[in-house]
Image (cartoon, rainbow, N blue to C red; front, side, top):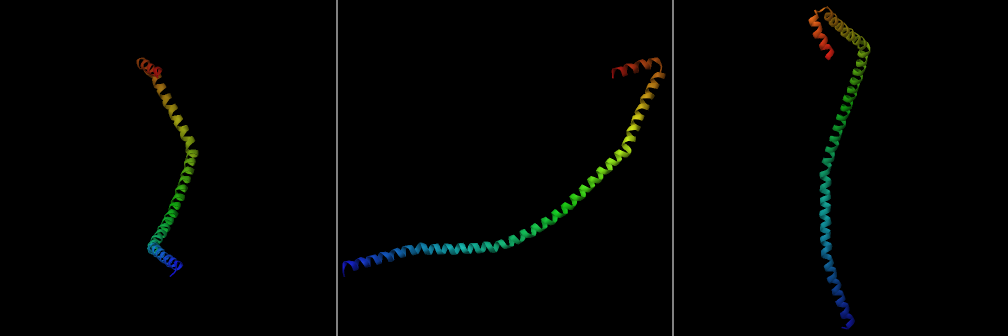
Amino acid sequence: MSVGQIAAIIAAVAFVILVLLLAVPLIKLGRTLDEATIAIRKAHEGSAPLLDDAQVTLTTVNTQLERVDGVTASAQAVAANTRALSSLFTATLGGPLVKAAALSYGLRKASQARKLKNAPPSKRSTKSKRSSRA
């Protein structure tokens, strides 16, 4: 055996040792990838029912929102009708009611003034003092 052949055998043995040392991490990496694949598959299988439930929930929420829209539209119509009724009431009865209130106030004041004028002098003086203070 020559020196070149011995060197070739040493290089071959070193290469085999290197391959064996690299094979262990590669095998472990393969197992890790297999586990990751299994975990992803399980997550995918578990997410399907969740997505179905989410779809049902969204459908229910959309139905409820449509009902709320109907209620809101009805409330808006009621508010508009109330506003129209209020303005109609104000236009129809507001003016006459204010006039009637003013007439009532004027008649009451006139009646009080007339009673004060026809009252005996002692009551007149106490009433006039009270009215002058106010």
